[in-house]
Length: 145
Image (cartoon, rainbow, N blue to C red; front, top):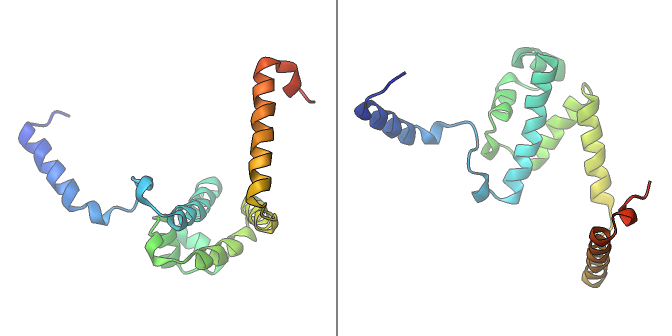
């Protein structure tokens, strides 16, 4: 399709005017860690819909989550949710998806990992850097098996 300059400018203006209505997040740099986490949780619903080839209505019937809420989740309207709400909905979805269940198990294990003291973290980081440096000098060191 060929557009005149005038038509292109008109489309740009319309896009700018309608940018507040967008449902997809295009600039993740300005998002907080919490918002990025929310996006990650919402992705599981989108992936489930795509993998299972089901519609929102079917997913609503399967999980008991209202269709309107599922629509908001799958359109990444993250400002409407708190992390705990998304986790609650995701735990319901996990009953129907082994992949989601595995993800939630991973999150539980990650939360239980003890935090290291700063001095221990620095020591570990130095050790890893040394191993990486030695590995680049001798490729056999990293071939552990």
